[in-house]
Image (cartoon, rainbow, N blue to C red; front, top):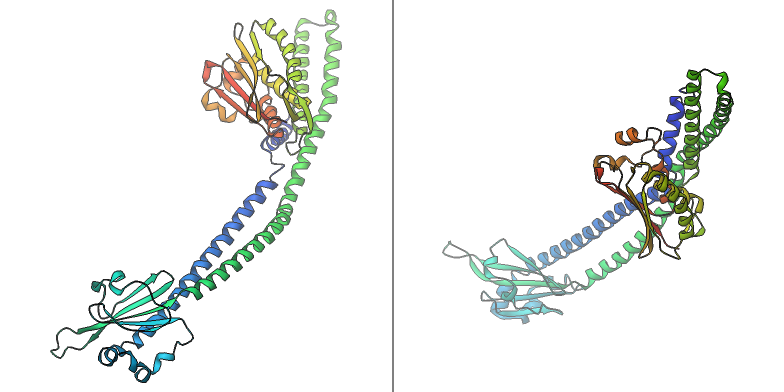
Length: 445
C-alpha cells in the first residue's frame, strides 16, 4: 500500500489541510488592516510630531521677541524712576518697534510695586504673585504663561560704586497675547486634520490596490494547490475502488484460496477502505473554504435530533450511557451538510475514545447571541501538552494512536474549518484521563 500513499501525495494533502484550516485563503482583510494600521501610525506620528514642533517653534519665536523687547527696555527703568512714564515718548525711540503687535511693558521697583505700563493688554497677576525674587539673577529671565498671555520678566541691575555686588534697580515684564499664536495653531490643526483624513483616504484606496497585487500570486498558488489536491484525491478514487472490487471478488471465493492469502486480501481490502475514507475527508476539507459565507437558515434541533438517533444505536452497541439535552427553535445561518459533518466528527471522537460503561453527554443551550453545543465524555482525555496541536492536520497523540490506530487525525481539523466558516468558536478542555469537553459556539440567525 505504500505505492498508493507516496510521500509527495501526503505532503500535498498536508499542505492543503493546513492552508484551509488556518484560513490562508483569506488574508486580505488581515493584510489590509495591518497595512492601514501601520500607515495610520506613521502618518499620525508624523502629524503629531509636526504639530508639537510648530507649537514649540512659535512659542520659542514669541519668547525670543519678548526677550528682545524687555532687554531693549532695560535702560528705560531709570527714566521711569526719575521722571515717570510721560518722558518715554521722547527718550525711548524703540517704542514703535513692535507697534503692530499686541505687546505690553510693565516697570516695577525692587519691591515689586508697579511704576508704569505701556500697551493694551496686561496680565492680571501682580509680579511677585507668580515670580519669586529669588528666581532672578543678573543673567536670568523668567518665562511664564499667564492665562492667554505669554510673559518674560527680567531683573535690572546697576553698577555699585563700591565695586562689590550690583544694585537691584527693579524689574521689567514684557507680555503678549497668545491669541494670534492660538489662531495659527487652530488653523494648522484644521489643515492637519483635513490633510490627515485625505491622506488616510488615499492610503486606504492605495492599500486596497497594493494588497490585491501582493496577494494575487499567493491566491493563485493556493488555488493551484487546492485544484491539484482535489484532482489527486479524485483520481485516487478509481484505483482504490478497483482494488476494493478485486479483493472482494477474490474474498468471495475463499474456498479456492489459501487461508494465508485470505488474510492478506483482508489487509489489502481494509487498507483500501481506509485510503478511500482519507480521500473523502481530504476532499471535504478542500471544499470547506472558510472564505465563503453560508446563507442557509438552518433549524438546529431537527438536524441534531437525527444525529442523536443514529448515535443512540452506537451507544447501545458499545454499552455507553448517552444523554442529551436540546433547546427548541434554534436557528443559525449555515450549511446543514457541513454542520452535520461537524457534529458527526465530534460525536464519533467521543464514542471512539470512551470505553464501555462510560458516558457521553450532548447538550445545546442559548448564551446571549450564540448557541453553545457541548459534547462531554468520560473517555481517555487529552494531555494538556497536546491541546495546542489537536487541530493540526494528520496530528494524533500517542494515546490516540494506541487506542484507534486506523485514524488519520483529520476529524478535528475538519471540525475546526467548518466552525471557522460559520464564524464560530470551538473550545476543547481536557485534563488527561478525566475525559474531554468540547464546546462549539455558533452565532444565532
